[in-house]
Length: 178
Image (tube, rainbow, N blue to C red):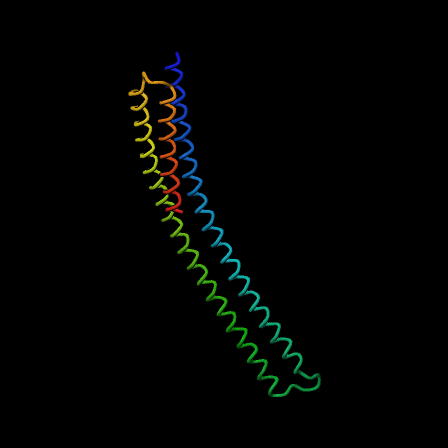
């Protein structure tokens, strides 16, 4: 009865280790994806904000300057020239803003491609690590069979050592991928 209970406990421990390893790897992959997406969103928001601020400041300065230099009785040639230059400046700023939007779109596309590649690599790593975990589970099962007639403490020590090795391998893989 003690032997059956011991084998059952070892099986439960192995299943828990497999589940924990899987959760750790998936959490690391999701963490990586979330970090990349957050960085992309922040960069896009900052770029759009800067472009909008520049456009607004230029337009306001142009309007204020032309209004300030315009008299109520007559409009001089220099004021008309300044108004034309203000229009040219606004058009140039709008073209620069459009170019900035194109650059942002290109950057977002590149980042999305990089995220997809990273996720594919992480999935491959997950599969490789899960295969390694299955190998470890088989090794634990072999150890349990070999130590079938040994004391329960020996089996627990072996399982703990295997669990520690698996966790160390998973942490190293997660750190390398992240």
